[in-house]
Amino acid sequence: MSQSNKDVRPEARIAKGFRDIEAQELSGLDDMLSTIREVYERYGFVALETPALEYTDALGKFLPDQDRPNAGVFSFQDDDEQWMSLRYDLTAPLARYVAQNYQTLPKPFRRYAFGNVYRNEKPGPGRFRQFMQFDADTIGSDSMAADAEMCMLAADTLEALGIKRGDYVIKLCNRKLLDGILEGAAIDASDLANRVVVFRAIDKLDRLGLDGVEALLGKGRRDESGDFTEGAGLHPVVISKFIGFLRAALHENAERTRIQASGGRYEWRSLLDALRGSFGHHKLADEALTELESLGVLLDAAGYFDGRTAIDLSVVRGLEYYTGPVFEAELTFPVKDGDGNTVRFGSVGGGGRYDDLVARFTGQKVPATGFAIGVSRLQAALSLVNGRKDTPPGPVVVLVLDKDNVADYQKMTQELRNAGISAEMYLGSSGMKAQMKYADKRNSPCVIIQGSDERAKGEVTIKDLVEGAKAAAAIKDNKEWKEARPAQLSVPQAQLVDEVRKIIARHRG
Image 1 (cartoon, rainbow, N blue to C red):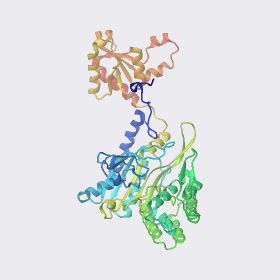
Image 2 (cartoon, one colour):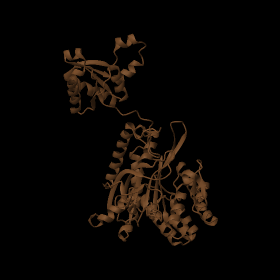
Image 3 (cartoon, one colour):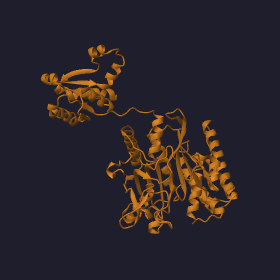
Image 4 (tube, rainbow, N blue to C red):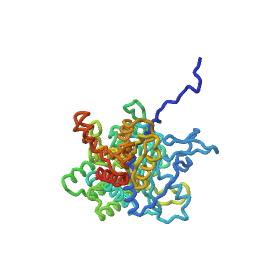
């Protein structure tokens, strides 16, 4: 006999590639977002929020010959049978907004935005399908000063968040250098799908190394789990050109690191001169090198070529819409994870110039550049740098010892709240011992106790849970505990707010 449908219960499980975020992490996240916002606003950017859902064609993910959008985005059809997708970044929705409001916006238009983005990709360790980004973009300026400003903004933001100078680098390159190699390999610029595979393969250099990139530029690569990723299928001669370029880039990075570690000054102009010789007079390469030189001059004049920024030929960025300079913020120091393993976080943000994105809607070229911080990834790095912080303080808990006097306990709780103190009255049905355990789990700084004896005297008992825990560690037996009653005092009820404030201030300091 089959089981009835009403007896079938869903399994309590979280969707693959997603995660729950608890109070401790959310508290740190709020502080981090506030710091980033302050830096972005100091640069003159204004806030804008766009929806998490957009029409799929607005995101640039076009329907192929099958009946669903390309892989990489989460999509569904609405009641009008139009495809909609969750945003995979904050830049594509911005392009739609600018195109829709172009006539009324100040130009250049400078905006910042933060929020979750969604990638329908294979999750892995530290790689989730939902994560937060914090963007800044300048729309309507073709000046390299706008791109230089993005690199400066990235550096200033990392330092404001506590990353020391020397522990990060803002790396910059230009997408046109790789476009030049592709063009030389007779890969049609309109063959977007193949170009994207190439760019994303190269973008994995820091994670997969030269051998992994070489496999992805060719037939493909099978990872440790056994999954196979289809490659770009380039001819071996073309692959050798890319690998040669990347090998030279890695050598140059190592040389730059060596020179700067010894206190010397890395001559970025000599690198550009060498590149001009290797590329000859290729039009795209010439444009790229001219733009990189302009960026270098601006950053050098502002004092940011002191190790905070550097030209790095291995930077490509995986998204297809970049058209010129690209940047990547990388943490350069190793840290230990919870298991004692050495971890190098690498990239925690990036961006670049995307002059053709708004033109998809208007047909009119609108220059644009931007930078995005990977908030979730950077927060994970900061938690290891600063050590695992204690759980943030919870509310003061007013215990309920006499259910006939709930109104009095609630009044007391509201008195604390009205004084600006986070407080709650215990709303369960358990006794005092369980209520104390509850307050411990809530990380309460103290609890308020008022039984019939205290009420008759017009007093309350305040138990400092932080000091009590310290004192308890030195108490040997139950008899000593009862005699000491550690970190507990009785005060007139009229002094409740003042005494609780003293306890909170003591532990906050």
